[in-house]
Image (cartoon, rainbow, N blue to C red; front, side, top):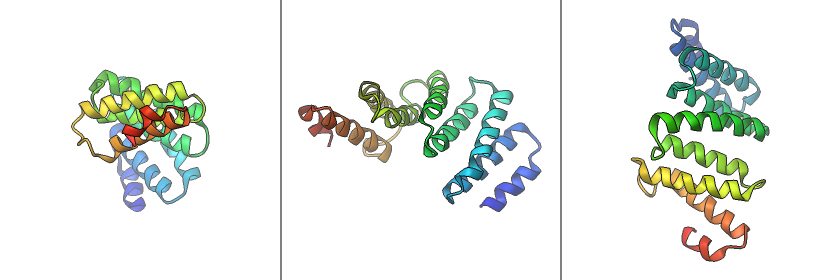
Amino acid sequence: AKGLFRSALGHATTPGQRVEALSGLATQLEESDSLDAALPLFRQATDLARRTFGLTDPRTATALYDYAEAVGAVGDPAHAVALHEQALAVYERVYGSGDYRTGRSLYSLAVLHHSADAVAAERYYRQALIAYRGSTLDDDHFWHEYARVGLGGLLLETDRPAEALPLL
């Protein structure tokens, strides 16, 4: 797949095609444990999406989300939070609060805040659950389950077992 994305990158004739090829190649590199090689490609895709589509386009939000996930994986939570907040703002503006993309961004923010700021993490988990419930995802979809279990775990960690147990 990396070869196909490299070829697509070489043949991209529009900025949109280039963003897709950069993001695709970066994802393939990330999945093959080449995060150091993937990060600059995620950054390039995000920068190009911002310049080409602006900060109100869902393609920019997707590039921001993907870049944020990679930045978080290398241990830069502050930068990851900033990128996720930007992606979330676009997703909420474009798709509303009841969309899986909005929920996914909220869940990622909850995870990033989980150990450092329990109040923020709880807020993001709860908002993610609301977004997933309002989306087209089934109630037992794994993203919904991750948010539910994450919130339950956080509630246990903050000595609220009565609230946590129904979620676990």
